[in-house]
Image (cartoon, rainbow, N blue to C red):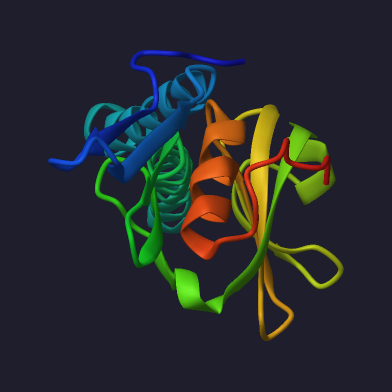
Length: 187
């Protein structure tokens, strides 16, 4: 699922050269999971307050704690990764997740050795939505299926990010690094 609330854009300096490129990707389906998390929390609170428990305190505590904990995990896990924001300026690539911007990754462009366009990134490739790490693929920020980009660092690590207009992100990163302006290769 893709959502295009605002197009990626760049800000220009006085010479007409773009100084900052920003982009984002959002997945509205994850809001359903956030709603389920809120419902779990509400159920836990309702169990604690409104229902008479004749079977003892231990089942009550287990039910309430279980519902509230599951609700909090679902709610935080989805709200934290419902969207990703990417910012490329003259010196850094910054990747921020969710509404509070955490986790946040700042990569100096001097550490990037390669940037590639990935036409099809899926949560299945990464084991789900969110901030992921896999030994064979590196780190991924996957909030939806679709296009993304992959940056490879000089130390061998790589970052894959799903973002709208990923080709423009690759083009900007390559321009900053002086790697050429041709069409990015598929990753």
